[in-house]
Length: 236
Ligand code: SAM
Image 1 (cartoon, rainbow, N blue to C red):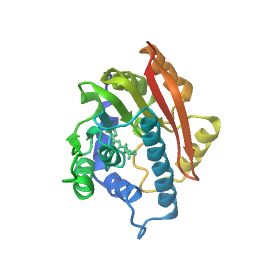
Image 2: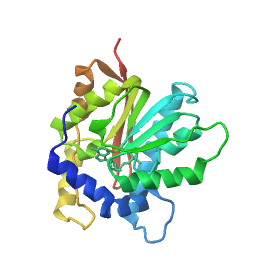
Image 3: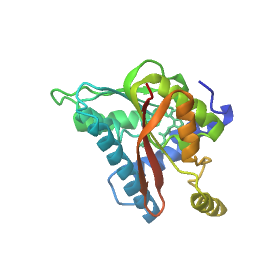
Image 4: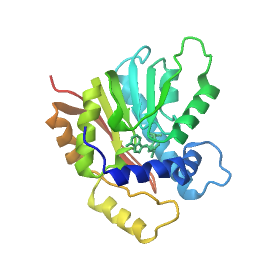
């Protein structure tokens, strides 16, 4: 797999272990105190992406016993509900703080529930992932990858998946590129990492290069959050 640029990756790791961890834990949580309007809006948008991804996966059949890799799991927003569905989840993230929080939340939500397998949480970057999974899911992580690195990462994630790969990314369209530029003109303290948008056609081309095709698509947008969701499967 290609490496995301050394400095970029170090910046992302550092961010998600410190200020980014505090910000995103709040956005992905349930509490409303101290959460501003923009953050609440992003929470809503992200929860729709998670919901749509779970629905996409369930439409393919029951998840009980299905091995799923949640690449870049954050606080476990996807890993925990998947484990609740009976999936055998491997969840990993570059940020140790995120992984610890995901494990804590899983402990609270599903520890000791009969018939469920507690997710295997690991501090690991996407590049370091190995093995084979029935399904690989990677939600809202590609935003940290410039297109030239994203292509290699998509190929790497596809190589880990036997049956399907579900990805979400912020789409690069004229309109969203404009909004992003606008956002960059007013940098807030929380915008500590660069964000990269990806054209759907580029994502699709990266999949096609390694023999995969997009089978289903979804899209979520709220005022401040927008994400395309694709489910890809091997061509043959
Ligand atoms: N997938 C989760 C979700 O949708 O709830 C979290 C999304 S959050 C916006 C992005 C996550 O990607 C962060 O937890 C961050 O630490 C992780 N991340 C960024 N670059 C990564 C990399 N190279 N390898 C693994 N995780 C990475």
